[in-house]
Figure 1 (tube, rainbow, N blue to C red):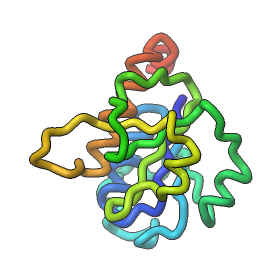
Figure 2: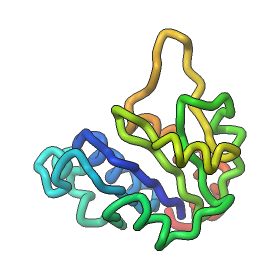
Figure 3: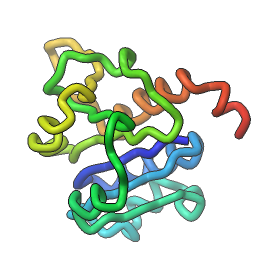
Figure 4: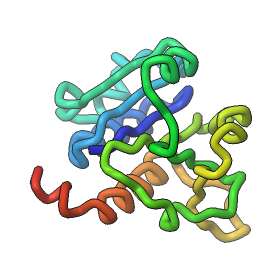
Length: 156
């Protein structure tokens, strides 16, 4: 239904939890190398529990490889703290790509600039600078599901 794209993820537990989330939400997971761990690592499998083998997983050698094989136009959103547009103002459609950057660097600035009208953020107080990657993914993915629930409930 949706495509979650993690650009250069660094923490295996987050990726494992996001994999589990994707299985339960019917979403595909795209991992863009370099990845800060081996995806066969015990921590990824533990966080993903017994869901990892059910995951629709795509691993790309680099961001150029991903863009070469996936047509990205208005069918994508890019989660960042560098915009004021809240995620709930996005108009998610079935099949959209939702990008998240690494825990340490976020989505590369060049990508954010190329798709600046599609940048979204999760509103936060001034006390924090970011949320955990797995939590952020869950918040945005389930807003996309909410907006497309008619299609989603056909699969539950």
